[in-house]
Image (cartoon, rainbow, N blue to C red):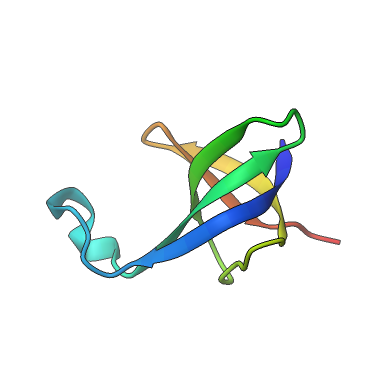
Length: 69
């Protein structure tokens, strides 16, 4: 499912389980059905208003990236 970035942030001080992955970007994404989901961002950094697409679920966390044109 695709969506649009509602808001985003970069995590520099991560919880212990994710310390080796920091810094990483997370975002709240407004989906096509008007729900919102918190997700990790893979690849290029996103900004508010960017279209994104679902990539996979990693350890129960949805992962999105900038939508391919």
